[in-house]
Length: 256
Image (cartoon, rainbow, N blue to C red; front, side):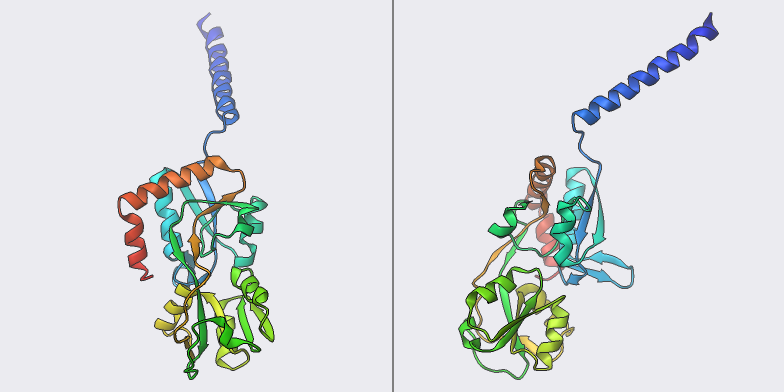
């Protein structure tokens, strides 16, 4: 009698456990881990550390701090900047953590978290160019450059005063053409260009004298359009790391 009922009890318990798991899935239990897209060309926000072969930077530290505060894990993956949003919308990644500015156009296809940092564009010229460039108007009729996939390409094209707007896969590629005199100036993320110049990673170029940013926007974590569950988790965690000083410490660590 006892040997007959034991298997039956095990089956019943198994069915009960399966039902519980199915119910949890149906209720949309929050994922324990998210795949995060970051670029290898956005120093100091995101970059590939050749010693560890891992993506590092301010936005990597930020998303890891958000994960810790939010009680989930993150798997940071190297993704080309122009492929970040397509990778997100196709579910190859779940979150973008990179130096990607919040814009109205991007808000049509993805959702942005609360801001973690804000900045505008910077103007880079050859090291021997001592002219003052308070605005882009001083470059009328010149060939200028910007990184493909950034808001700066559209900004330059809409300006409509340049001989040509060339696009580059990375700021480093743009900088090489600038140093060689193939373009007159390069426009990009001000903190990224300034950091690289100060670290002497970019040779033969400098930040333009007197230039003031006009396209200041927020850097946020980015999720799929309509993914309110992930967005809520991320925003709550961002509020936590702002309140306890963790985010300020990360920003200070990377000198931006």
